[in-house]
Image 1 (cartoon, rainbow, N blue to C red):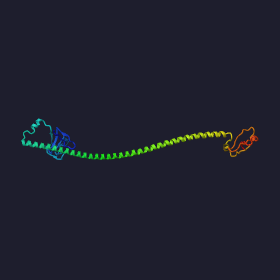
Image 2: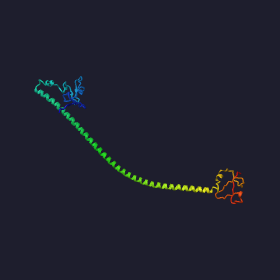
Image 3: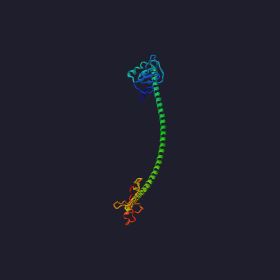
Image 4: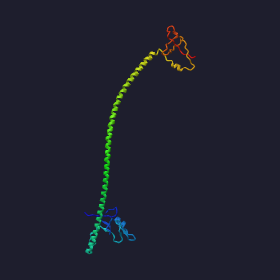
Length: 257
């Protein structure tokens, strides 16, 4: 398994497969960030975006072809002495080793940060689980308390329902008795009024309707006058027309003075 170079620009981390900008400080950048960062100015001074090293020389930063053709590979080191070729190869291997080491450190740092984040999340999760367990226990106790209270209230409701039924039956019984007594009183009053209708008449209405100057004059009734039977419940009736026949009856009528 071959490893690819990664862009060393901060937060880029793009894989470098065909073209790359490389520096003498052993850093590599993608084409996009290399073109943007390595535009030479009038002073001919550049700075590495990764480590801040000044790149003054012309060959301190170049754009390298990571997939050269066979002709380039056969001619690039041709004519050089073996010690020069080995020196170039050793420097190339050193550049690659540095990139691998930097990538390893980056991945280890990333893994460490991930582990710390995971541990933090596990602690938060543990605290949340403990909190939820405590709330669950509280809810269970509350449910038991509410169930007990419910059973108590239901028992009280059943007792009150039974008492209500008893009182309802008593009220119905008393209502029947009251209706019977009312019918009895009405029948008794009707019989009493019917028996006393011909004996007397109440004169309170006549007394209330008369004027202040109006007085009662008691005169014997004539033969052609219609009788006005007026009496008190405790006063006997007197009729002057039949004094001889009925000496205990006296009839009178009020006339204006």
